Image (tube, rainbow, N blue to C red; front, side, top):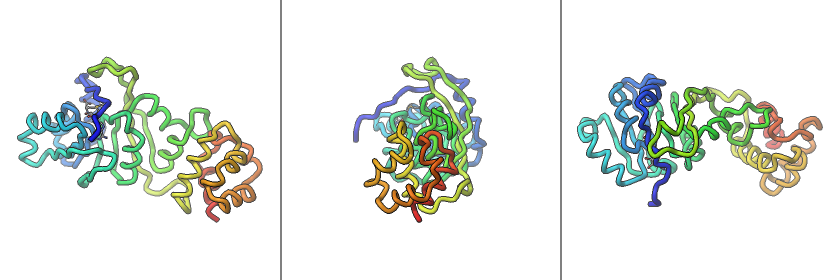
Length: 257
Ligand code: SAM
């Protein structure tokens, strides 16, 4: 197992209190990814949650097993030693976590795929801002579109490096993620949608027409032709960050035929 990174531990009691209080965790099963030394784990348990804590670092797992042996014995805490990107995770209702920043994207999309009632997640501030960037603005990117297709993202709290030990170089940001019951704009083929969004944003300075031409091999020949002949000239002249969620959905549905 590779050596884990991202070990900046929360030391700000006020922040721990706020983060553990954003979701109503009492009596619920809460998934915590990257519990570290357990500062958030303890707060969640004291609010009456049952916690599943997934930690990659074996030394921290041993530390947690010793510190929380009563809670592990009573079944209130389940510690999973594994990589949250791929390990098996027991069923849960909510997620509350200070995520490892280098795996934020993969873990977020895994969680979206697994489903949850609500997630309170801490990210590097820049990443959180990208998740929340509105379609049609210059900050909007692949992450913004892919997250906002499936979830609503609400800002909750900014944290300075001084809230952690050791201090990270960057600010952090806590957001609330709730999954949409139904997609705002229906998508016929979600795999193709993901490919199109990825390909268009990998050429974000190009117009949609140019980006589709360049990416024909990845999007598919017939799919690309359907976009170029079926999508309005107005859209083909735009750049990906200028499209709305609806326009991405329409474009992908045109491509799937
Ligand atoms: N929650 C703790 C806190 O706030 O003090 C620690 C947060 S620290 C930013 C991230 C934690 O995630 C570390 O304990 C690290 O070992 C763990 N980690 C890193 N990559 C991981 C992965 N892929 N799966 C599970 N845990 C991981």
